[in-house]
Amino acid sequence: MWAVIETGGKQYRVKEGDVIAVEKMEANEGEKVSFDKVLMIGRDDSTVSFGTPYLENAKVEAQVLKQGKGRKIIVFKYKKRKNYRRKKGHRQLLTLVKIEKISA
Image (cartoon, rainbow, N blue to C red):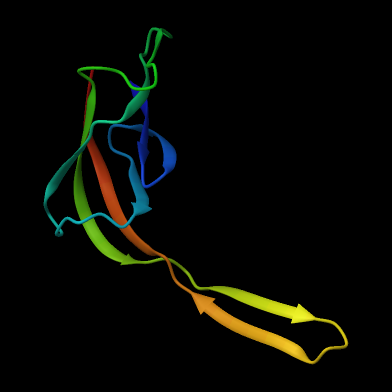
């Protein structure tokens, strides 16, 4: 069984046992969290349920493994012949979660 969930403005396709990095959540390491915004659920017998926009009575339960930062990206602004250069770095705050249960 798999599901498509929405969190942090992004959508993720998950199944039980997956470990995914999502936008920072206000939860401590080891806590259980549940995602109520389930867009779609697919079963092993190839039947799919769609929500409008979300499925009612469906949720995905997960455990927070780690709070951290993603890899650094460089933001570089440049204008030719004007001697204008700006270099900035950014590391996005992420939460690592392990999907434990999908219930429909």
